[in-house]
Image (cartoon, one colour):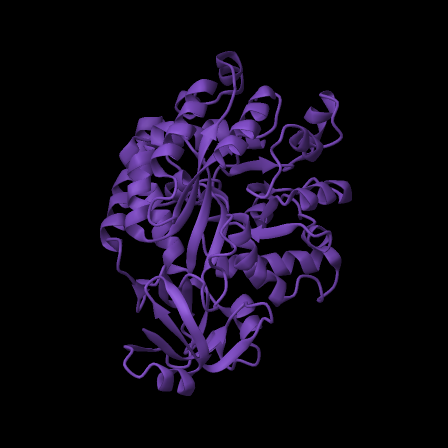
Length: 465
C-alpha cells in the first residue's frame, strides 16, 4: 500500500519533514519513504491511499494510564474531597473496588477506543488489579490492534494498614498473590499479538504502608524475567519524608538501591526530584512519564521537565487518570506540557514544539522498550502512524507542521490510524472495536457500579433539575 500526497513528519534521525511525500507499507513494515512521484514510479502496481495533502506522522504513545478509571471520568469534581487520601478512599477506591471483571473491561475498552480515536497507538497501564480480569482485558487489547504494556499491580500492604487508611478490600491483594499474578500473566500474555502486548510489574507507590522489601523482590524478578516496571514516583513531598526515615536521600536513591531503575522502568510524575535524581535516572536508562494535564488539574507540580531533559533523562508523555484529566487526548496534552513549562521557566523558548512531539513519539517508544521497532517513519520500522485532517479552521494555514500539530491539533482531527500496517481507524471510524456498543455499555454500567459501591450521587455543585 502506498500512502501518498502527505506532509510527512518523519521523526527520523535528521527530523526530516517531507512535502508531497509518500510511504510504502508491506505487511507490518514501512519499506520506503520519499516523494510521491518517485515512489509511485517505483511501485506502479501497489494499491494507493490518498492522504489528500494532510499530515502523516508517527502514532503517539501514552506512558501512564489507569484504564479502570476511564469509567470514572470527572468524579474528582463536584464535592471537594480533601486531602488526596479522602478522594481515594471515599470515592475512587470504592468505585474501582466494586468493579466486576465485565465493568473493568468496559472501562478499559472505553479508554482504548478514546486513545485510538485521538491518535495514540501504544500505552502503559500502571495498576491493573487482579479483580479486573487480566485475560479479558488482554483479549480486548489484542482485538483493538493497539500496543500495550500492562502493569499488573504489586503491593505489600498489611490488612491492618489497609483498614487503617480506608483502602477498599477490592483494591487490596496479598503480596504473594500480586507477584504470582504478575508472573502468571507475563508467562501467558507477554509478546502476544506479534509483540504488541507486554506484561510489566505495576508497583504501588514507595510509601510507609507498602513494605520496602517488596521492591527488592520486584527488582530482582524483573531482571530475571526481563519484565518492565512502572511506578508512581516522587509525586509529593511525603514520598521524600518516608524514604529519609529509611536512610535514603530521595525516592530515586531508594529505587536505585532496590534495583528498580533500568532501561525497562517508567517513573510516573517525578515532580519532587532534583539534579542528583536526574543524573541517577539518566545513567540507569530509566524513563519518566510526564503527566502535565493531570498534574495541573490536581494542583501538583509543575514537574521540572526541562531540567530533566537537559540532564539526559528520557521524558515521555502520559495522561494519567480520567477522574482528574478527564480525557486521554495526547494531542491536547502536548500543548499543555509546553504551556506549563513556559510558565514555570518564564520564557517562550522552554519546551519547544519539536521537543514535545519527541516526548509523545520517540521518547514514548523508548520508555516502552520498543524504540528500535517504531516511533518514526523510516524504512524497516513498523507501520505505526496517524493521519491528521488539516482541512479545519484551527489548522490553517500551516506555516510550521510541527507547531501546528502540537499547538493546534485536537484528537478529533485524527482521521486515520495504522498500527503494524493494519488500518485500525479510517474516516474517524474505528474498525476493530464496536464503538456504539462500548459507549452504550458504559452508559449503563457506571450507575450500577456507583450503586454497588454505595457512593452517593456524584453531581455538580450547582443544582440539577
